[in-house]
Length: 190
Image 1 (cartoon, rainbow, N blue to C red):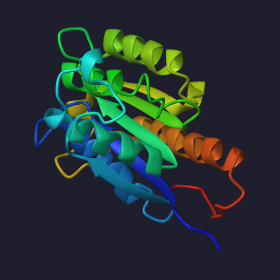
Image 2: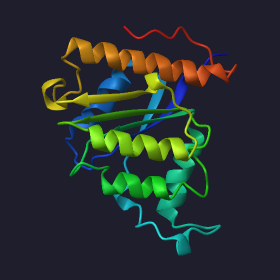
Image 3: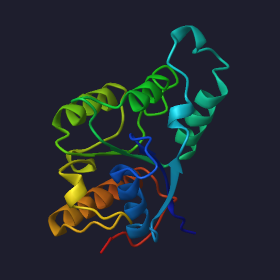
Image 4: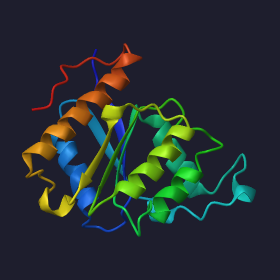
């Protein structure tokens, strides 16, 4: 019996109307036949990383975040660039997973969608690779000038960008299915 791929989606922006959150919602609509996307909304509730608190029983918000990651077949991160870097709340959340290794061997897609985004994309990609996220060249995407390529409902209005997002979706799907024989579906997003 086939089932949808469970994806935990994380927006690096905590704004309620961010382009990155809209992009996640758009991707959720594009992939509704193949992905069950759960948007993690507790990023700003995670306390500042403190190794002294990273114990067998971490803060409840950290335990909740880790559980969401563990339960997912894949992780989708859509993030802006803040002051030429990774948003602090996103980096903080990822720091909490280093010792517990939720990203290790987990299929991950990274989209950096911002005005430019190059510095944040490179930095976050380095972090994700060092913590052993399972990624390929095709599961990462930089979308500069995002505000001109997506509308407020999350519809990707730029055809080149839509093609690149579809390629990323297919690549993430392939990465998940490569090692999982319990998931079957006709995966091609139009």
